[in-house]
Image (cartoon, rainbow, N blue to C red; front, top):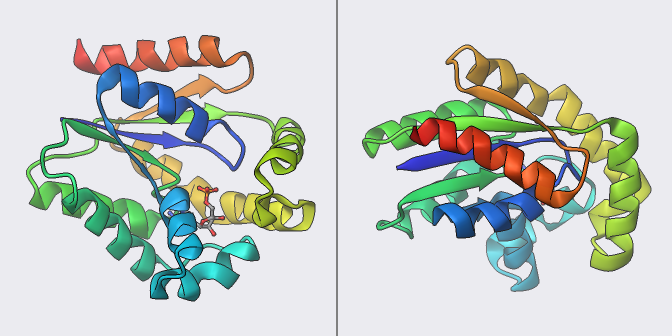
Length: 191
Ligand code: AMP
C-alpha cells in the first residue's frame, strides 16, 4: 500500500495537489476538513458538535477526529492506498494513525510537507475565501488556524523526521511544477 501524508499549513495547496495525486496513484483521498464540512452541511450530530469549533478556526479534539478518521479508513477496505490531507494535525493524531495502520498490517510510506511562506498563505486564502465562502477563511479565523498550525501541528514534522519519513517540496510555484515534484518524491518510494 502507498499511504501518504500531505502536510502543510492552511492554504499550502494540500487539497489541490491531493486531487491530482489520487488520480495518478489510485489513492483514496481522506481530508478530515472535507469530512467535517460534509457533516456540518448534513447537520449530523457530529456536525453540530464541531460546527462552532471549526468556525472559530480551532482544532477539533483529537478523540473526535481520530475516531472519525478510523471510520473513514474502514469504509475503504479495498483501497490500494490513502492520501491523508489535513491529518494528522497533532502528535497524538500521528501516533494514533501509526497504531491503527499497524493493526491493519500497513504503515505510512512517507510524509511530504509543502513549504509555503506565511505571506503567500495569507494572500492565497484571501482569494480562496472569495470563491469558497468558507467562514473559517475570513482573516481573523485564518489567523487562528495559522496559529494552531504553528503551535500544535508543526510538531508532527519532527515526529516523522525521526522515523526517516519526511520529505519537503517547495509549495510556491505553478500547480503542475509542484505536482511534478511531488510525483518525483512518490516515485522514489515506489522505486
Ligand atoms: P482544513 O480543510 O483541513 O483546513 O480543515 C478545516 C478545519 O477542520 C480546521 O481548521 C479544523 O477546525 C478542522 N480539522 C480538520 N482536520 C483536523 C484535524 N486533523 N484535527 C483537528 N481539527 C481538524
